[in-house]
Length: 165
View 1 (cartoon, rainbow, N blue to C red):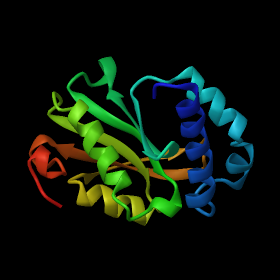
View 2: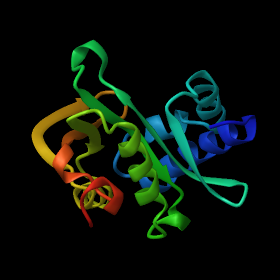
View 3: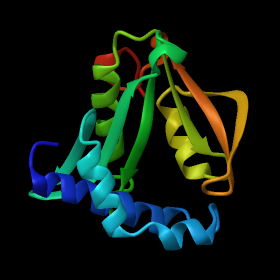
View 4: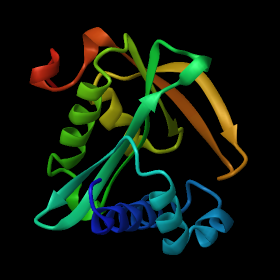
């Protein structure tokens, strides 16, 4: 993200994507508290390691990525990947994933956490080469079970990353 408009666009996608994709999957109380203003505060507070997808000047998706720090120094992570529902199936999420994985190329393993009941996201991540580890975590924040998925370097999605989907 390079401009305030892109940061605000990322915040809108964050807010809208949660309200489009997660009703019935996470706590209604959490969704009610997740306002556009809160998403903007987060976006301006943490602008690093975020890439946006744009349609013209409109931000339509984003991906957040980084490392696990001292907890697991050899593991990269996809922290968030969201695309507006009207852009499902357009390749926007795929391009965002490929861009983040390119930036995480030095890590032998990439992980992410996904809501266990989010079949659409799990299917997408599996197409990208991620596999469930069997680890699960109950998030008190959203009152939902999360599933950990891992991608080994030899399973990167995208032709330029070594595998086709």
